[in-house]
Image (cartoon, rainbow, N blue to C red; front, side, top):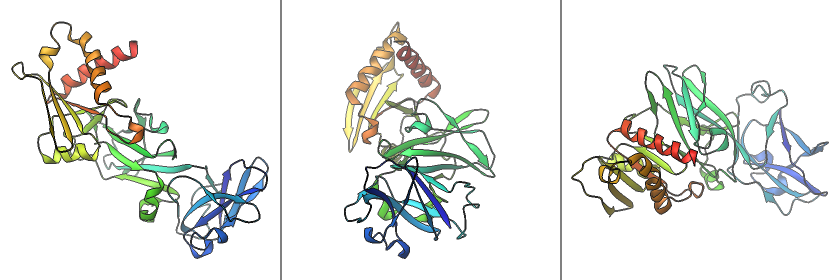
Length: 322
């Protein structure tokens, strides 16, 4: 028997129902959904005798669930191997859900057990401002979060490994809107968590790095595979900082990409560090689009990441000091 809990305050006369994809719930029929029990503190509870299903909550009338207000986000997942599994899930109080939130587990294959970190656009992942340490279990590094599916319909995230050098994965994307529910597969879940799994730190040198919500950076794309990587990361505005004095600034458009080449030397004569901040701010203002709407940010590239990181770190310092 599984015990479910949900804290949510409703108007008098309404109730929380749980519905799902099994015969027990009538295969998503609101009329056969199970009404939860109200407890003091606006805590709704119910015991469910099945253990492998997708489910979701909705609000309706206490006596007649004929008009439903479904929660946002993809279907919730429950996947266990035993009918009596509160102990298997290590849940003393049962399964505690939060309205319009989803439990997500990020995993990365890490048999060497290097120190692993993750950064991303959601609050629990540091909102791209910091890296969050991951826990290790056997060959897997993992991080559990509770994602707000209204604010975080799309989560961009990136794994980081710390050895003698620091490496990062390419930017990955997790969709948490309702459109994925119909294609959702319980094979991509872990117990009652949505699972975001990375097989390993592949193509390290060609990785895309994220500076903040406005800027990604990395090496200059060389071939179709590199451009495919940028496309997958929704990076369509590419700005190359050229170190060649003889190369004039220019811009071209091919396919879905806008490619700009800036002569770093000619733009940075003399006090180039003091000119760096307004230059990047100009690029952001002209080409940046809000990340939360799942649109592009600018991608700055150079074939020397050490130089590029130095310039971008100087830019960050100037931006913070303002």
